[in-house]
Length: 480
Ligand SMILES: *[C@@H]1O[C@H](CO)[C@@H](O)[C@H](O)[C@H]1NC(C)=O
Image (cartoon, rainbow, N blue to C red; front, side, top):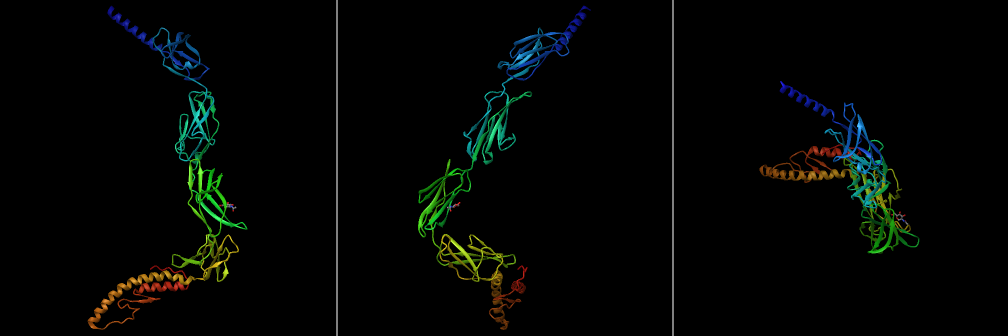
């Protein structure tokens, strides 16, 4: 009996200790972050316990920060750099400690600025750009970037954002512009900001190989060449250097991609090979050479005619190109039946500075071109011969060619076969059809088209229909 009682008391005691132990587990609450210089409050209590207890606030390895007595106690803590750490509380004379509150002392942000690589921020396409948002002071920061006043989206594949850095691995022209950043303390209440000044980033384009060309003009007494040099792309400013036979003739630093230089030239005299060199920061490029040789117009003037056919093989248009025997700066003029053609007309176009006369609607007649030096209005015109342009004849041309090739092939087969048959029959009974040499188609039905004899009747029928249609100037839809 006493043994049973003893056991019961032990059991009861154990129960009480257990209840008491779990009831006396304190809870610490407090902020996880606060600015340096501010005062924070930590509260400690045992949930459900309404009698005053003495609580101790400890930090990290166990440093005692303070002790207070009450149902719920409050510890006031001025925040210094040393305040950072792990806090917990416990009930004095009880073993149980609270869970831990990790506390950070936050330095308010001040003095944001931008650093760039390269510095100064001028780079070429394809190069790397790295910007960093620096602060004079401040901890627990987040950064926001702006490009041309637009917030840079973290998921944009134009930029890479990481911590305080914005990087662009291969810059392009669109990365040029104004950048700024804002650093912010990561605080839910009362966040502090600091913004940098704007930084202007220049992404330059590489210069393309320059092209040199020249025109000539007379300044009254002598002939001058206007030699111009031009790069199709690139970022100015650039330096253009004009070289003639390797000698520097002119140097110009320009804020554009083109420069020109006036140099005297003599007609008919080769003044040498002109080249231009373009220089920009890291690049130097040289143009192809162009001979400074002004050849006056002379020699026989030819006209090259090209017909353009439509789907029905009807000559729809004609192109007349005027080619003088020589001359570097020719000017052209055209005439039809000895009256000159004005620069514009309903049925033609003048292209390539008048060198090409393009007849959009062929009017038959005698065409002629004449050429003289463009820089000398008193130079004499050199004329071509009359060129007869006719609409109707041309249309049949391709058909004749087709007929010729097709008939040639058929004739070889048929003549060969027929000759054999003829020879064979002749040998056999010594009697047979006799054909004239040009219309020699003894075995199958034949017909004659123009100068060609054809040995397929239906082919000839179609050829004939087509040729009639062409002669009557009607569109014909015949496929062979
Ligand atoms: C020379 O040519 C350039 C174009 O290539 C032109 O802009 C400029 O006005 C010309 N200069 C003269 C004096 O004709």
